[in-house]
Length: 402
Image (cartoon, rainbow, N blue to C red; front, top):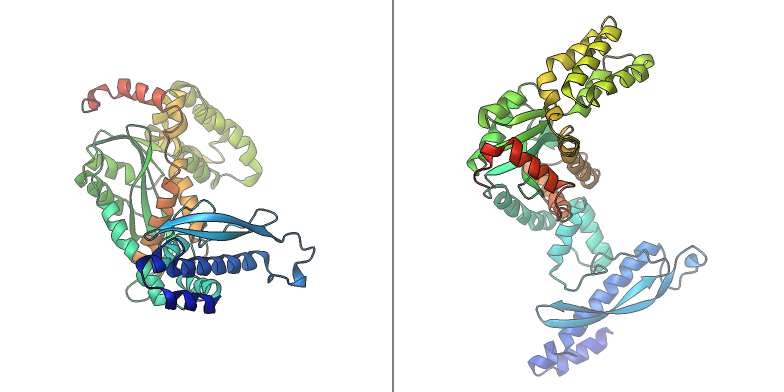
C-alpha cells in the first residue's frame, strides 16, 4: 500500500492529482483512517485479525460498510469494519459522523469522557501510531479553558423562575502542591421558556455561604435581576446570602437533604416507623395539615429524638415554601435533585480522577462534561406550560418585563 501511495504522489502534477476525487492525498487520508479503524476494532475484540483466539469467543469481524466523509478538501470514501454483535463504536470516526477534523478534536473528545492526559497519549500512540506527549495533550485541552471563560462571562437573562444551587467536591493541588478539598459551585437555572441552563461553574475552597455570596453577586453583575424560587441544601447562612442579593427570592430548602440529616439523629431500629410518620409531614396536601402531622410526630418522638424534630421546626419557614404551590411546581422545587443529577454526570466523567493538578484542570473537565450534557436539554421541563401559567399569577408584579 505504501509503495502505491508513493507512486501516486510521484505522478501527481496537478491539484486534482493530489486533491481530486482519486487524488493521492485523499487516498493517504482514507488508508490512514481505515488502518486506525482496524486497530480500534482489534482492541475492541481483543484479538488480531485471523487470530485463532477469536474462534467462538462470542464476537467477530463482520465485513465492512462504505462511508463518505466530508472535510476541508471535499469528500473522502472509506471502508468501516463491523463486528457481528454490532457493539463496535469507533472513536476516530464515530458511527454517525459525517465530517472529520484535526486529531486535536479527538483528543478533546477523549478528555471530555474523563481520560487522563497520559491515557490519551497512550491511546493515540497505540491505536494510531502518533507519538504525542502528555504536555501536548494538556496544551490542546487548555484551549477549552478560554472557551469556558467566555461561557462563564456571558450575559444572562433578567429573570430565572427557578435556580438550583449546590456544590460538588474534589481533591485538587493548590499552588504549594498541597492536596486540598475544593468545591465546584454549580447554579442550574430553569429559564422563562422552561429550559435548563447552567449559569456557571466556580471552584473554591470548602463550601461556604461567603463564597456563595460572591457567586450570587457575579450572577447579578451578569444581568440577573430576579429569581423567583431558589432551591438549596441546608448550608448555614445560605438563605440569608441569597436574599441579600436577590431580596424577593423565595427559598426552598431541599426536603430530601433535610430527611437525610434527620435520620442521622434517629436510631436504625426506629427509622422505619419514624419515616412513616415523617412522610405524613412532607407529603401533606397543605401546610396546615403538615404542621398538624409535625405536632403528632413531636408528641410521639420528642422524648427520644428531640434534635431531629427541632431541625424541622427551626427550618420550617424555608422547608414549607413548596406547600403554597400546585403539584406541578412542588415536584420541581422541593428537592435539589435537578442539580444533583448534573453532579452525577460529572462524577461519571471524573471517576478516574482521584486528584486534579490545579483548578483549571478541574474547570475544563467539568465544562466539557456540561457541554455534552446540555445537548440533552433541548426540551422544556415537564409540565412547563402549567408551571409558567401559575408563576404568572403568583409573581404577577415581577412578570412585567416578560
